[in-house]
Image (tube, rainbow, N blue to C red; front, side, top):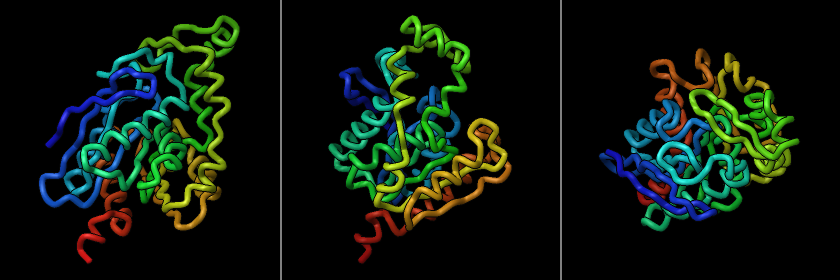
Length: 257
């Protein structure tokens, strides 16, 4: 079961989302943040959220600015913008009577949910999948044009199957981003999932995040997975792990008391 929704970005454009709804009893609600330019329909986003919904955790996944079905220009976004729109997604969901209890992020989105958590106080737990410790890690994906962007203000770049405009403000914003304090001051349980064979975001990023975090913190190795979780069963496996780990932090437990 899924419901298509829209809500405003912090900059005013309409962002398109999908709310994956549990068919049975609801254990809780969460927001999912996708990878760098991947979108809400990427395998990791769609499969993780659908599996969580199947296990009773409703999830809102959405396209960031200028991606997928969302309005706007991707080049006008930034890491800070992605973080702020994750907060807006949580506010939107809460406004429908579904307070967010868990934040889940894949890759660049994993860094975003860690940074966003401070502004989503109702979120009880955070889970990351293949996340970088330093958001500027994504610069390797556009390093061929970065000097031109800084010198001229913008440049065209092809990222996967997308031709996008990279702007100086984006590069500078990502370079300024620092997760160290956000991880240390997270103040809630953190689950770090990462594959030792991830060739896009090396496993040392998981170690850095885990070491910077305070308890309660957990790490699970996604052995055999690739970064995008595209192989059969990989994303669903990650979702099942998140579902089991999140059990103590969902409001269902309070309703059962």
